Image 1: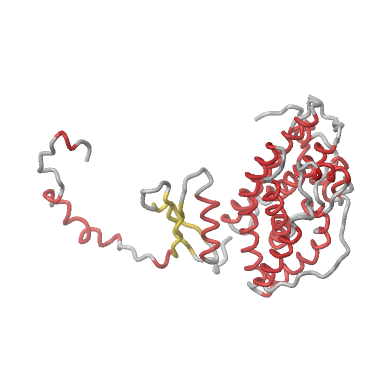
Image 2: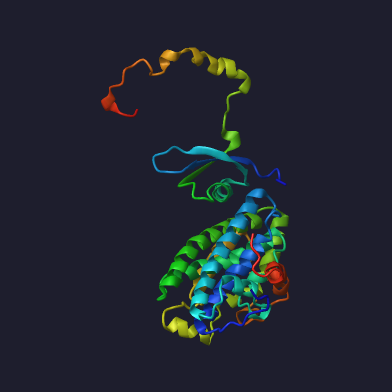
Length: 258
Length: 95
């Protein structure tokens, strides 16, 4: 087994699948970093469960990408043998865990989008994708509920928890615009009913934010300038460090098993 | 690890329709909703449950272990309370 980076033939369906798979893998890996470090054992388990759900979603999406690419790549090669510029995840998902509030706000932003997105994807013309969407939607619905409840408790908790939650909202807000981006590669898939327009869930996303932030007593940031680049491989400096940790065993000991 | 603001909750699971909820353990959570979430994440990871109850631990009134003699020993000598003095017809099958 090689340890050098692979090349991927990113035809539209492969690119589409890698984008969704990378979102799930990178956010799942971030959550796994909490394992053994969460503020309480109950939340340690909750974050690890969410991370496992996401990594499971990534695996099925990488499988579908491998089948679509037909070049002998597989889930491990996509995860472990691509460099940062080859990753297609949202910049939001690679942002560091920070404090607990930062992690919860990141999850809230993502899950408030992922849940309606996967619900819409259940109508995909691709039966594999529709099945992945049906499974992912149940998981993301719970992730959203869990993150939303914590948003309320952090925002409506102590002055310190409120301040930390508001800081996290303000810091991560510019990373939310990217979720709704579409490009030519995806427009073709949307036209044939394989994918749905990611701008579609924007209304549901905004409604979730309004409702939860109102309950939490937190202010929705007003800024309109948004970060972009993750979908085409232009990442923040954080992804390289994440990949170094995630990939080093696979690259140092090719084919290692335990 | 655990802040004093997170009280203790007892968790009860019903694994199948028709069965009673059974006590499976306890956890810390700030309130009932988060306790229910934590119970889901801690105790139903392997498909154990169809229904979860969480109850504040301080809502449970427990018997005192030092009262064991008074509470439970008198029943030990009342074997006639067990339905072992009847002939059960074979046709009844498993009771």
